[in-house]
Length: 260
Image 1 (cartoon, rainbow, N blue to C red):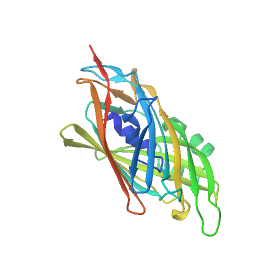
Image 2 (image 1 turned 180 degrees about the vertical axis):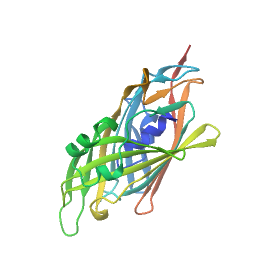
Image 3 (image 1 turned 30 degrees about the horizontal axis):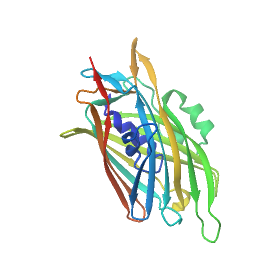
Image 4 (image 1 turned 60 degrees about the vertical axis):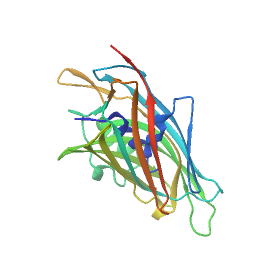
């Protein structure tokens, strides 16, 4: 099944942020957005940026970013991310192995990878700061794994797995639901629902993620990510909703060069 290319950026929320913003910037030019006391900095891009005008071609995507508060306080936890994405791209998972949420819950990174290795579509790293009452904030890091959760009733699901060891070992599994929409330039809506980390005390402060998965199905070579460039741009708009009510929204345009 094919879905808009920029929707894959939602996977990079990794329980964090408006990762869709990462695609707006070139790989050497970070983008910073402020929303109230929050400051979000993103970087990333896709390769190649020269794409066919009329047919989809494979691409790879790298995104990364940081989240902090302007006054140095503990950032609020992210609850949800909504991203509307360009109709001129696609995520293709037809014939690709799937993984279930139940297979990832309570599993550390190595175990999750072993159980659902064939369903992995991306990998990365994230840092989380946990602020418990009357204790100094604790910073922990985790590998990230992105799995194909399958398609049902026109909705495609992706699962983002992270594992933290403090205050107690716990798997964090973010669910991303992707469905088609018909809204002018935008052809897809992706909604990422982020579970509480450490009972709500944990906030992701940085992340990086790479998606560059190609596979073969029924003798045909496919790419999880693909795009075309009919008019010199790909675009999206996203909104991140945080636990304290703060919302960060932005429209995104990423230039490309159309070729025959």
